[in-house]
Length: 264
Image (cartoon, rainbow, N blue to C red):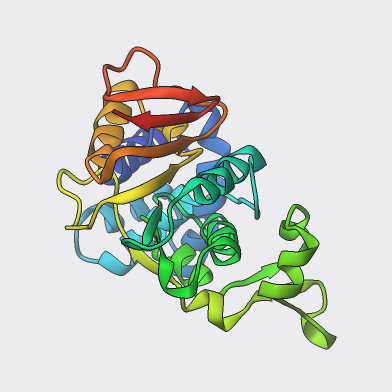
């Protein structure tokens, strides 16, 4: 991949998803797209760029977006957020509207199912809702299937493994399947957080927006967070990644713990 070709893909993914790729990501970009070049029998990245930017092959454009935005995750990542979520649920009064949580950059779904396990443990079946969204159609399909390598479940409490997961046997050994009951409680939807207007959604009590802001430049980051905050009810909580910060962004939130903010 030439420097010129890399710049083209940098612009492409920034316009499509708001993600800023540094020069250090060039090997990752070329590596992830190489299989598509081989599959389509293209002899240059420039030819592939022409295809996905022309508007003539929207399915291939989505494949490219999927490849350039997917990041591996695991269950109960950054466990203190889930401890904080549990404390919110224990303090909550019984009855009232369902407790709503949005996993706003859910990747392959491990975060959303981790949230669902905590909610199912502490609230009645009709007392909660989880929306899981991502820009990538491919990772959303993985999320809907709920089938994962067992290695990603290392931080799942044993009780939750017994209650909410099925252990693979025979050809599925080394994998787990999230129970059908839990899968049916999580709604997956394709949402581009960089879109000027997000879909109409009801307000949420908690929003997870973790480990995605690090991929945005400063301006895009501010716009994305403000869009997401519009869907958080006053007094609701926003969780971001521990390597991220909303400091000095002029947002209507107050830090209450590391990487946890309360909307004023």
